[in-house]
Image (tube, rainbow, N blue to C red):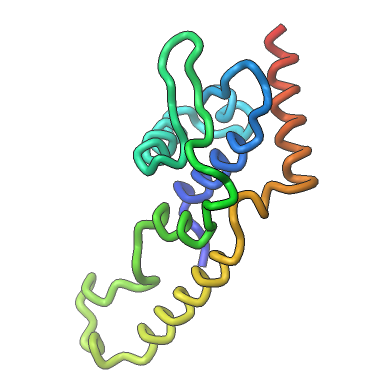
Length: 149
């Protein structure tokens, strides 16, 4: 199993904006530059994250992104489930499978996926941005700001 690029980018954005202790706002362009991501892809992700309320966006010359929810309450399993947007690892309807409804594989995969989400819910965004990760993000942000001067 591999997370979609959309989910990967969504998690990166959440991690990056969670470490914002500076006066200048974080922008989509900054994140795109720091992670070497096409800005257009990032706009779609940020728009979605804004709709969920996980981040807040402000337009205009002093606009930018910030975390819209307490990072301690944002459980990773929930975030991944929402970003992935799929309830199952396999789609037995496309193309139609003659084993559909009688297949032990789909049941096993669904149970495994639920166990994965349950396990990931034991971590919050705050848990995965501690220590080294937070230090790297802060360094990236400061490097970006220094490059603006």
